[in-house]
Length: 148
Image 1 (cartoon, rainbow, N blue to C red):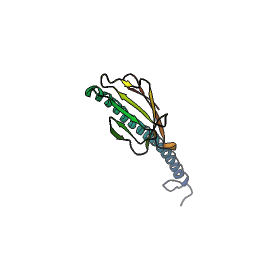
Image 2 (image 1 turned 90 degrees about the vertical axis):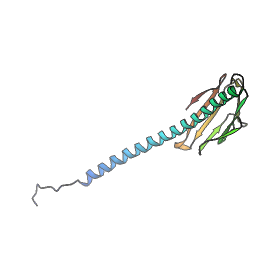
Image 3 (image 1 turned 135 degrees about the horizontal axis):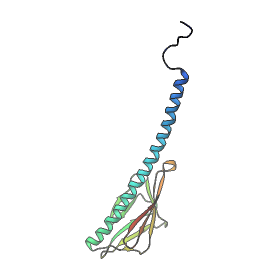
Image 4 (image 1 turned 180 degrees about the vertical axis):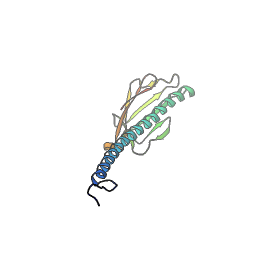
């Protein structure tokens, strides 16, 4: 072999640099995916609850009867008009009072009773994977506001 001739291929240093860059990119991608999945999950649950509130209000007007939505403290389900709605695994509801919260939509106009903002938290996961959204049901028509 002559002194200036070099074999084809990669050196050990080049391979280690490529592996290190791939590892860094993988770590960033996994972190972003975990955040995206946690945010998507909380949005899905809040959307489910928002739809239930809208349906309760619409049913009250359509059937001309009062429809009550009950949100227990530290619950994994809630009730709308006597029908229990289960939340996905790992999701809990938390209210400011230990007795939970209750909202009734009147049968005449679908107006919310009590005429006060009802607030509760929706929590998914724990630690790094955990997210909390505060849902407010605002009178008079039970519109929802969400703070994440």
